Length: 129
Image (cartoon, rainbow, N blue to C red; front, side):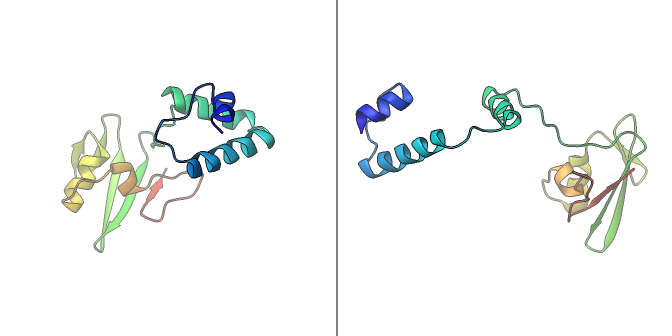
């Protein structure tokens, strides 16, 4: 098994790896290599992620857009401006600051307001244009 591992991965297995785990890992790797290759787009994306260069930013609205979120029975409306965000007549630099002011807890603003992804609003909130 050690020789097979070295052939497949170009290096010896970790010294503390159990035979059971090595057998399973080798079986998985051999099956993965035997099946059809990954689609090129997926392979390219995986390589970008592995290199740390994946730029899949959270979708955001352009100025003039509006986020809506109901929290504890209150509808909160946040307008997107050139300078950031407008909520209750006050400008904020980030959605996270507004989410923190609404909930009193640390929240990711985009996660709290649930920007539209793939043409559908999230279950938590709604972004409108």
